[in-house]
Image (spheres, rainbow, N blue to C red):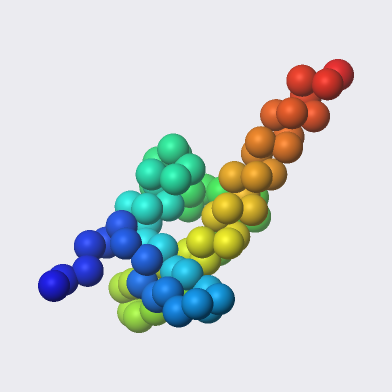
Amino acid sequence: TAMRSDEPIMRDGDSPILIRLPAVKAQTAIARTQIYAGIAAGTFPKPVRLGTRTVAWLQSEINAWIADRIATRDQGAKR
């Protein structure tokens, strides 16, 4: 069966999990333009190049980015 673009590219026990753009967009709820603007600004994880026209992101880095957004929100609520 063909792999869908929103499925992990690799998964092997504790090995890093790479996810493609559709999954990153779904998990972060932000658009492609915002993702690439964040990369350029240094505020979003950089992708891993897999080929000349293929990139993916580490699931762990996306999870950390999401956790940071939640922590920032929670810190603001305590003020």
